[in-house]
Amino acid sequence: MGDEGERNMRPPIRVAVTGAAGNIGYALLWRIASGDCFGKNQPIILQLLEIPPGMQRLEGVVMELRDSAFPLLHDIIGTEDSSLAFKDADAIFLVGSRPRTKDMDRADLVAANGPIFVGQGKAINMVASRNVKVVTVGNPCNTNALIASANATDIPSQQFTAMTRLDQNRAMGQMALHANVTPAKVLDVFIWGNHSNTMYPDPRFATIDGRKATDVFDSEWLQGPFLETVATRGKAIIVSRGASSAASAASAAVDHMRDWWQGSNGRIVSIALPSEGWYGVPKGLVFSFPCTCEAGKIKVIEDLPIDSYTQLKIDENIAALLEEREAVSDLL
Ligand code: NAD
Ligand code: LMR
Image 1 (cartoon, rainbow, N blue to C red):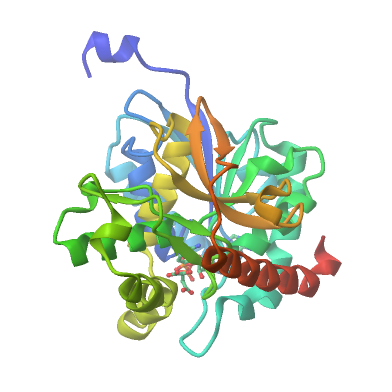
Image 2: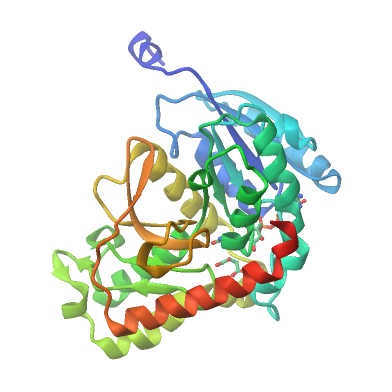
């Protein structure tokens, strides 16, 4: 790096990743360390959390990160102690948890994974930066974000989000494929609700190469194969790969945090965050809304018109999330 590059560098930020030796971690860490998420002039200290059975694999991951000689990577901490991993963290990716198998729904993971987010929420509350930005990836991610936030009482709940960006990216990929354009031509399709089979990719404000998606595609496709493919893509990948999506999930986590950190340039992005009653969604439910991001802040677009089909889909997601919340009431 030349003198000019060095001069423009910012002080390092601390980025924590849980489940860092897992499949998503293996794809995510390299994207973060290369500058894809926080910018090419933002040095990083990685703080990686694993449980004891994952520590040997984590040592190997740390060796490989060092061997990649990333200019932005100032330090790497690998630990099984959450109070070290989250210490002064500016951004946290909560990935560590069990993935489902092909005979499960994501909500079936709540008993196994929910308790993880109690301890981690408490640790974040104790030691993380007061401005920390948290994205929850571990499933069921909306409800796990709710659990973490409920256990981090001194940190504003809006700083705890869950990832529905993978669903948005899947929707963009399907629209691009169907219209025979590159995904860059697909703008402003977004997800309502839960990262589960009830999620709803809303096409009404999307454009394909400047044309309204609702003019490019007919409603039979949008409400049929398109919706079905996006909503069940996670299971299709598990059946096909024998393991849940990992590289695409890591890529979506980078997109989510990059837009939150650096801004979404006026584009609509899908972020699940605690409702403040928007669109009739009960307060506190971690629900995916249409958002924009600017100057490190998420803004929910509050005034989109809602037709009866969209309302039905929003209601299905509210019902699913209320059921999940009820199932974890002892963890909140
Ligand atoms: P994986 O099994 O490959 O890795 C998970 C890692 O987490 C393991 O290394 C494990 O040791 C570690 N771990 C488990 N409990 C932990 C804890 N308490 N603290 C720290 N680390 C812990 O799984 P994966 O493929 O990386 O998936 C991780 C999670 O992400 C799963 O719950 C999966 O369902 C979810 N996921 C979510 C999305 C999404 O769109 N929201 C997409 C894909 C996967
Ligand atoms: C996905 O959407 O690929 C992940 O949530 C994994 C899963 O269980 O579907």
